Length: 232
Image (cartoon, rainbow, N blue to C red; front, side, top):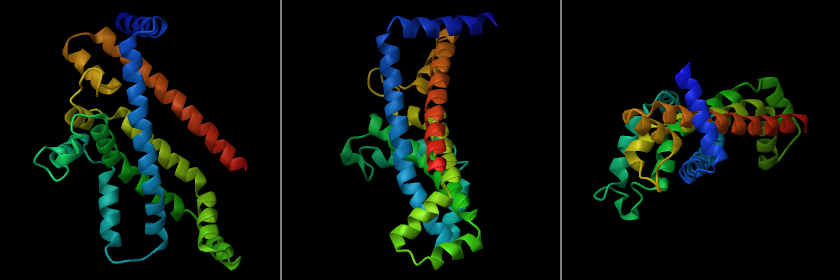
């Protein structure tokens, strides 16, 4: 209990005194996590809709990969991204390994299957009667897509929040592709692992409180946006 209180006091001190390192780490965490979540959502939601309403060759295989990818170990994703971005890899010329861009790519890899699968499930909850009613209105493709999005919005927001939760908690892939470089690629989760390895449990706990605060704050914002959409 004393250790937890010590970590809480340390977190308050870090935030109150304007610790440059903690603010830099927190800002980078927000940047890479929000960007990767946006990318996963922009790709995953339309893809989930495509899988739900269109039939094409290989659809079942893609669904299987997507569902299986929800449990993809982050270190596996980190290994794949590292191999792609390594100097001798296919994307080595980009020079993104051990940069925030590499962390974003790795986080998209681990969160995209979650967004795709949950989006597919959200669109699947639209019953056939509702679909026939919507189609009977004679909407254009854009109007039909908009109507489907509105019908499935509650589940889609859940998909986005699940994807965000995955990237906020991710550490293995970020450590592998980012290298945990101070002032460059160090984020809250990798910092916590480093502090624990050094035996600085109070600092690690302080960082965990900051991460939980961010998670709660972002989730509250998303929930507020969700309620606004529902009432429109």
